[in-house]
Length: 259
Image (cartoon, rainbow, N blue to C red; front, side, top):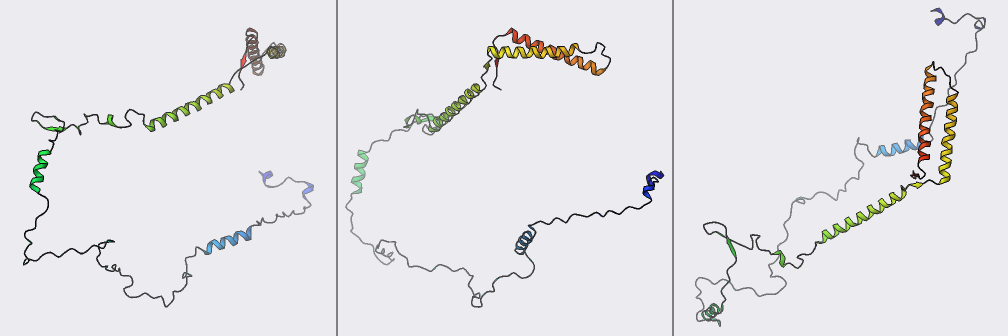
């Protein structure tokens, strides 16, 4: 416990050493300090709310007049018949005035009505259907049973919005087909040449020989975990290389992707 509080006794500790004074580096001062202060004061002065507002005093000549804020009706205008100068209609006759007698019109209403009735064509009955046992009728025009739309000029023609939709679908299909072709072209597989085939096969056999040499140099007794793991790892790598060599020798034509 005493060693943790007091230092161990030594002749070098008898002479007190010089006290080292720690010199602090100068305080960091930004070069934008004055600019920030100025910008802060500018934005702060525009938001002050204490004291009277600094506005111009109203002129004494512009005072509020009496009844100046009341609504005023528009001025009355003289009645006129518009742009055309038509004479005024006569006044309504009084009760004491007698009506004018003996005035006849040129048209003979009795004769004209008789001729009109003689020459009139009887109206055709409008088609209707009976929908109750009591004889209640409804017109066929409003029932939806009459094919009115076949008489239209554009009957049987494809609407314009459907044509636009078909065009959009066709363009989208063309873009998709072009995209698929590009992707197939990019992902097309490449065939290995005979030279590359032999180089890969020789490289695999060379790797297998190096691993087999390392495997032959292992200790016969695997008494530690490290030796056991090393032996298992070499065996797995040798088996994988043997499978790859067998695959390369079995198939003469091999394709690989561009990726």
